Length: 313
Image (cartoon, rainbow, N blue to C red; front, top):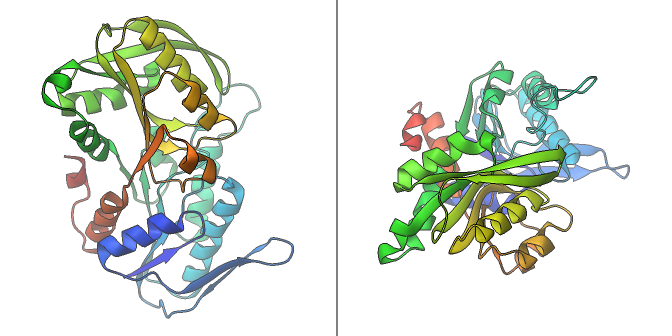
């Protein structure tokens, strides 16, 4: 078994290696003068079970090409099995036609990864569960809920857990939020919003009782943070005692960190599926929790032909 890392999230790959007590495979993933990607595997991988850790986050196109070329290099080096470990799967928000003459980019990316030579995909909290069906190879979609639930429990004392309410920031995320609520044995509320255009939304109503409650917004992706901050403000207006947010993938592009700092959110907790930028690290309201043990354990189970679904319990 070998563990290979691209350049998108070196710190997470190293943490996964530490969990597995396994050094990263020596490789060169670099650029030509014209920024074309060049990959050289500096170890023998013939007949090996290789796991390639690479998020397709910003810059999404560069990181995606790195992943594809790493897979191709391993295929031509006669690796026995190649698993693409994609902690954050980019282009997942384009999972259906939203209008005339628009692409389904998630399907296109799935085809590219498969045709490059991957035998299996391991990812975490896909934006839409049906993306698993876009792949013609086995795909495991891990969930960060156990990590989030444990962190929430550690931050609450005494009766504070009884005041907890999990909030879905939109109707589409209800199933995800209900799973976390059931795990914490907390009630669920829903933010009814209207999206006028991509990246912009308006809160229309709050479904559920949030007055005097410690509200935790739970979502899979935070990009511009506009939706999250608007939902937090609406919850405070409805009498919420406090509002924090837990999000699996902290994209946090543009002025997102500034919005979070100025918002009524007490804290935004994200995982390390995307390597934090300097702006994210400097934001006092943003905190990262690691999913390295979760992904590392999934890799160990796949390599040993054990059940991965046990990690969802």
